[in-house]
Length: 125
Image (cartoon, rainbow, N blue to C red; front, side, top):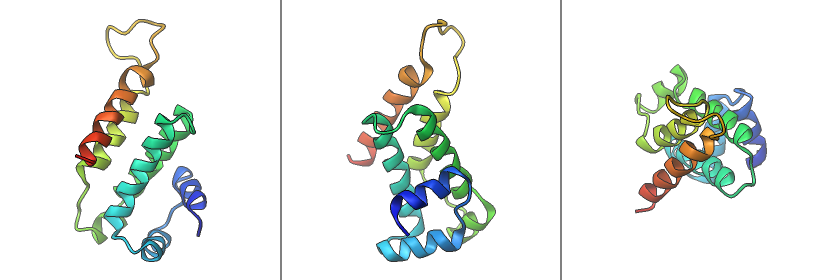
């Protein structure tokens, strides 16, 4: 399976555990590392402008749904890593105007971008 095919499955909430485990096996990484790698890729594609906010946000929502599903949590010992939570939260904060925001403020520019930069910097520190 190709990377973009996996990302499309994630975005549509159609990635199944067996597909993810097979892909992780092909890449020779643990499932949690694969999930964090996808989160990083989604963040990078958004920050670089390759993906717009809507595409990145929907893909991140799909990844979080996958990572926190009963099946996946059972396999990974109920672990959800801080990096995944940081990236998910960054996208979540860009979904709406916060109290005190002006009407012309773009939430994902104000909140998501700086939070993703911090998350990526922390991951590679």
